[in-house]
Image (cartoon, rainbow, N blue to C red):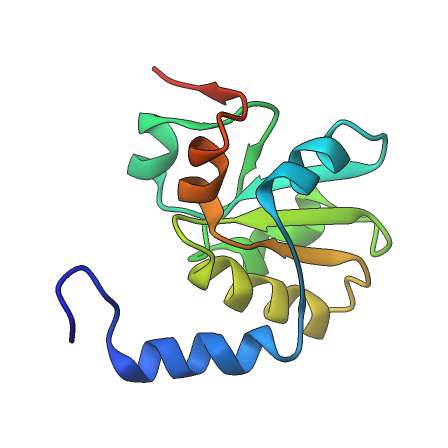
Length: 125
């Protein structure tokens, strides 16, 4: 595994998921997040969320999104924009959401790193 990289099987799994989902870049995600009916969902771990997150986002970590999404987002047509640290976990989360019947779920390519790199609004504690 390269320094700072991900294990090869994980990367392969994510690349396969990317072939079955839709992605949006961070700048477009920020624009869309301001529209009614759009939810920006941070799927990172609690500690990552607590350290800082996109302004206006809600938190449903990858570890619980399948369990908790129906109560949090009952509308299967809601536009859901998921992000993680770099776009890997969010691709997997979006693939799960699609399998659960969510028709308008997207992964934010580049995730938190792309969001902050573009200077988009964040909340830091």
